[in-house]
Amino acid sequence: MPPLENSFLKVPLQKIVQLYCHEIAPRIPKNNKLVSIGAAVILSLVYLIINKAKPPRKLRHFPYISHFSILKSTYYKESVRDRCQRVHIPIVESGKSNGLFLEVTRNGWVLNVANPEDAKRVLLKHDLFPKIDISEERSGTLQSKFTIRPSMAMTSGDQWKRQRNIMNPAFRRSMPVKLFGNLTQEMFRSMENKGNIFTVSDLMERWTLDVIGRAGFGFDFNSIQTKESEWVRRYGCINRGLRDPLFFLFPRLDTSARWLFTDRQYIHEQTEIFLNMLDEVVEYKKLDIKNGVADSALDENERDLLTLMLESGEEGSGDMSDYELKSNLCGIFLAGHDTTASALSYAIHYLAENQDIQEKARQEAISILGDKPCDVLPSIEDTKKMTYINQIIKETLRINGPVARTITRVAREDSVLSGVLAPKGTLLTVNMFDTHHCQKIWNDPDVFNPDRFSENGEGIREAGEGMTWIPFGSGARQCIAMNFSLNEQKVMLSMLCE
Image 1 (tube, rainbow, N blue to C red):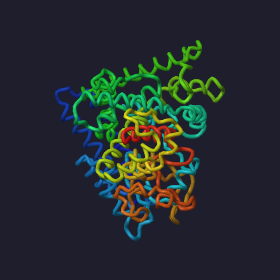
Image 2 (image 1 turned 120 degrees about the horizontal axis):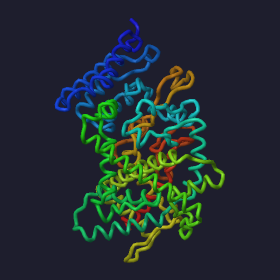
Image 3 (image 1 turned 135 degrees about the vertical axis):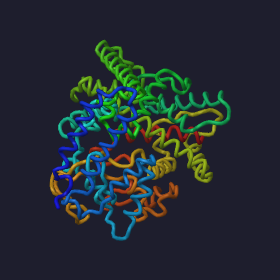
Image 4 (image 1 turned 90 degrees about the horizontal axis):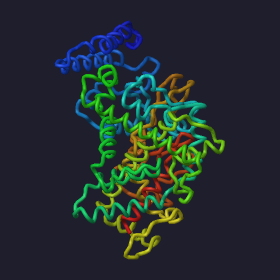
């Protein structure tokens, strides 16, 4: 029997789903929303089940997870990390596992890579395993407007290289530790006026929002002082919309069927306002540079990334269109805000839970910054001395990394991973969470232990041993803002411990 994805059912059912979204849904009265939404979801689920019940024959030599498992996780709103812990880890830790398994996604069956050797090959051979292009599939969705656009993170080949050549110098030059310190002091002052009980995750989200606004493109959200400011509410609205699993799984509901969802329409409107603000910021920055009024009073490393990116273009590193600039600002915004806020929240949790580790971090901070009865702002040189605090950050990112897996990639030619053939066209992802939590790689992987990353710890591996710590990826496609984020965390944690 031929695989279902090649059967006669595929094309007719796909056309039925498209016909429903484009022709039927727009004609349904708004008072029948629940019926029409339910019909769209059921049609999409039927298509998913029939079209993807089993992997293609050429991939069935890999173990695979039933698509019903995905539907179960979706029904119970299980997070990606919880799902990895419950479903993936028992697979990769089994005696016969080589850390390779298939799981179905919206893009089709994807080979998860969860062993250090194969992870290294996939991450370093970015020309052999380029990222897939999902811009057309997601066109018109909220995700497309804010994250998929032609940014460096989502492109490949010459387009990626051109943008990387412009952004690399900007990120090398920008390390605004003074700004990090000033905003930390501002946060402390704000805390003094608001009682003794705080929600740490809320504080970190507001602090990192102000950091990325000012360090990214010179815009002050004033989030630390004014929690309910217009721009804080607007970005919070967009952020919630980007996380909604219903519209991620069924993008048609976010495009041709969006009229059914008043709240979704509102989120799109708020996104347009936010993107228009970025357009204005880019235009003002260009005019400032043209007229020679860019803020040259700041130290080179304290200038915002947008200014430095524009100057890189002026200096011959290449040009980016305004559309590309805005796209990359959105990418920097998301990567620099949510991920760092989450990492800091978890780090503070672990420090509160482990008083001995907290004390050791405090002693290191005092040895570097002193013990004066006032806040001392760390310098770049100070951050380089924070060995133990860096270990805390690395262990936090191992257990609770910013993302669970890489953006899906595709094998451009037949490739061998752990002695098994991955045919040309195979979709792959490096599963960071599984790699970071596998007992075959780490001792007691769920235990918080910064000493793993000490000079002789298990986290320090020889180059030939593969990649075991990969929260930011690796190779040429490694997160360009890695050092920016690490130093941001060092400044916050050292001043908090001091």
